[in-house]
Image (tube, rainbow, N blue to C red; front, side, top):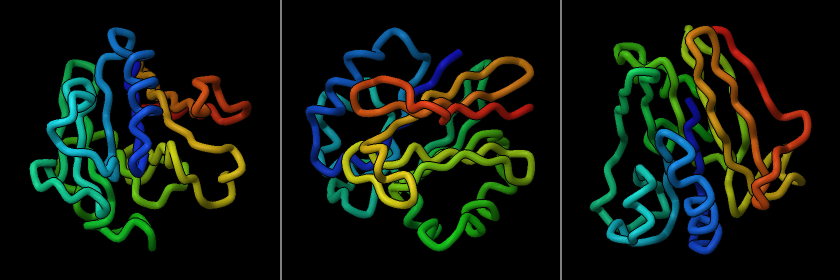
Length: 172
């Protein structure tokens, strides 16, 4: 089963619309990790499950989200409440008592996927304003594939093509 994870569009509604339209009905869920700079009532959030980012001013966005289906237990946040721009320690501590096996965040605009304490932490990077050592890739988002034995995180460019060499597999 596949899940879309995207973050930090910073007002670039057109790229969100393009990606939502391309993946609607093709993934089980679509997570938006904050900093859209759009209104929470925007029709895109009929498909995307959003959380509030530090650049979102509509208080109708939730602070975080616990998601559960038959394949996945996920905790979603933007990351600014946990100061993920410094490290993942506060976020790691916050989810220690949660049943989530996958934790998604944004905020840093830097892609990342790593297992910590038996949980998979994923940052899809920014679809609009990438930062860090892989900023040259341009905007990115991630597709999480879940099977009974593993997780696979594959990063994609804004043009919806896979980023060569940026697909990572983790055992459950």
